[in-house]
Length: 240
Image 1 (cartoon, rainbow, N blue to C red):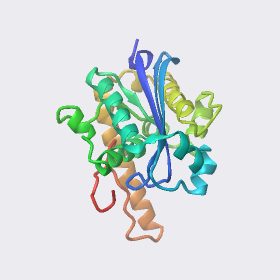
Image 2: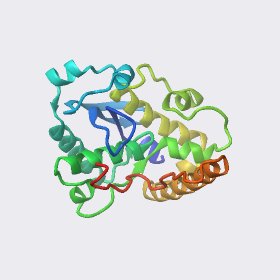
Image 3: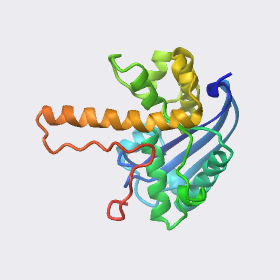
């Protein structure tokens, strides 16, 4: 039947910013999906402990006042989300996140910031896996397609409804459905097992990053650096 028809765990964060090393969690969602149908979900609202910039509020709609009044402490949210994801990975269930290196790096940075066990600690020293990243897979499977690769744009390409973009639960569900749609269109992706697909994505992301870095340097930015680590980038205490 293929991994994309089995249980998948959609995961998404909405945050205070775009740098995963320094941004904070505002909302989080984990949703169980089988063959495109949602089975259950968990959602969190955090008080990030810092001001949510106006441009971030404009994206996800969570005001500073609401986060402070209704949100759980940031450390509790990060700890709970990490525990839930680790439980699925221990059971061998793939976690689907669109642009996974952002969400999983940000979650890892939050865990370190609050002195909590890392994802690897929770997995007995193993790396978080398997991860399915429709962004990385689509960019490899249809590399010459023109146009944007935002979640909204790629959902449109594959006919996936996304009614409330930048709502964590809606984005998590869309990511899981998108993974299935990509596998349906590209049988070679569907034929890979979750462990092999995870390994391939590490390679694909590194190759894309090297190519993009070379492109930026040719275009006049000789110091450009594009991080090629997927799905969790290296953390430094200085940046976190």
